[in-house]
Amino acid sequence: MPATIIPCLRSPYDTVGGIVQFGRMLDKIRLHVRGELPPGWVEAMGVPRGYDARCCRFLHVDYAELVAETLKGGGDEELLAWAFEKGREPNEEEIEVWNGFMMKIGWRDAYAERVRFRLEESGFPPGSVLTMFDFIELDEGRPPRFS
Image (cartoon, rainbow, N blue to C red; front, side, top):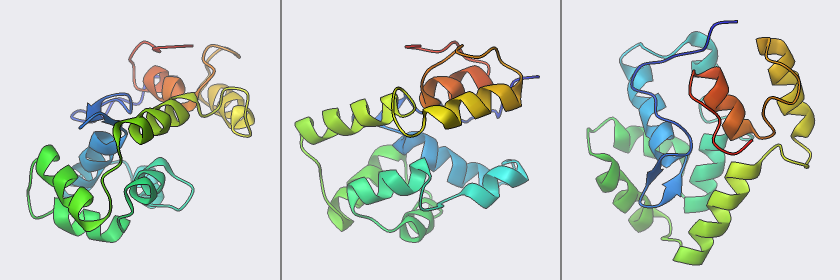
């Protein structure tokens, strides 16, 4: 199955202010407003169990409010500063724990079956990756980082 390549969509591993997933979430918001996000992705934006909603809960900001702020046109660092002001600014240790948790989702936890399902659904060999972040890398044509 061909990779799901969406130009201008960065890896979930890429950080803004040291925080994984935040920049990718902003990319999806920006891509959606330009009509460049696949329909299935649009439906999943901000869903409670999704990574974007998790990131917003981590920062204590409302997803819809972050979308509105993003659409005003600020840069990544400005939007992160807005999130810190509106919600909370996690300390270095909290960011380390957040990043470690997010990067390991699917590895020996309740989401492991989801990783297996997504690999099968996408036509990748079983066990080619162990985490959702690495599945995303593989699915989007980038080499997995840790699996």
